[in-house]
Every structure is written in C-alpha cells, then in structure tokens.
Length: 203
Image (cartoon, rainbow, N blue to C red; front, side, top):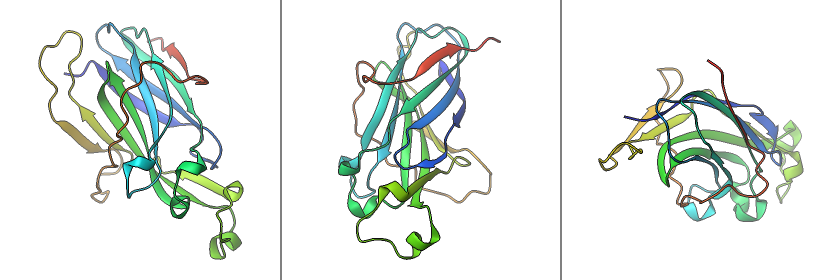
C-alpha cells in the first residue's frame, strides 16, 4: 500500500512562452510518518526517437513530511535549446513529473506539450531556423497519464512490484501509449537554484 497519495496537480502557467519556467502546485496526502524526504523531478522529453535527449529540468527534496495533506510549489526552468534536435523544437512532446522515495520512483505523471508559433503567419510560413522567441507552449492539462509504482516504504519489507498505469480525465479518452520512461537516476539533493517551497496544508 502506498504511503503517499497524490491528490492534485495544478500547472499555474499551462500556457506560456517556450522560455518561461514551469510552475506546479502539487498536493498530496501522507498517511504515515516518513523517515526521509520525497524527491520530485521534472523531465522534458526532447525527442521521441531517443531518451538521450531527455532533460531533467529541476528537482527538489520535500521534507520532513508530516502526516496529513501537504502542498508545495515546484518551479523548473525551461529546457535548453541546445539539447533538443532542431526538428523536435516544434510540435507535440511530453513532460514527466516524477515522485521518488529513497531513489525508488512511486509515481510518474506525463503531460503532452504542444509548442507552436504565436501567429498564424509564422505557423503557415515558418522560418528556416526555429525562432524560439516567437514560440509558445501549451501543456494539455486535461488528460495526464499517471503511472503508479509499488515500492518499499519504511515499514515494508516486500520488494517492489509491477507498475499500474491509468488515464486521468474523461472516460472516453482514446487509448495512448504512456510517455517514455526517463533514464535519469535519482539525485541525492535538490539542484541549486530551485525555487520550490513546501508548506503543510491545515486540515
């Protein structure tokens, strides 16, 4: 049984310029005390062709986590253009928000992101080289792909079992392949510059 239950994710700037940071408000419930912090990461899938183009935009350690409902804001910088193939700068890609405990991922939430020019003229007659100053992104927040993993928590001694995948949103959503899994290993501490803040919610 999972000790942490994700209750809600709000992307505070789901429509923004390509270069703007991603800002999330994450609410989760912890049903028993945890000995260590929870690590959250945001990953940008630079190309569907290979995970070598995945970028970890930021990560943060949240804790100590009290029992009850908790909420925090997580801000991550935009992806680096230099790490994305030119042909993949525009169009639909994926961002992955992951939660891990002791380097074991227990939840992954994938969102589709559409990158497009901000004017009809540029969309119909794009320049030879992508002008990111005129590109806006839209995160498709209505139907995230959620994958949950059973992991070993503090009080458990059983090994991790298979993942469970679900589609959040309308029940008539078409079947879709889950976003590709990131290949990054868990980091030991938050990256410098993270502006995430953590605050328990009074209930």
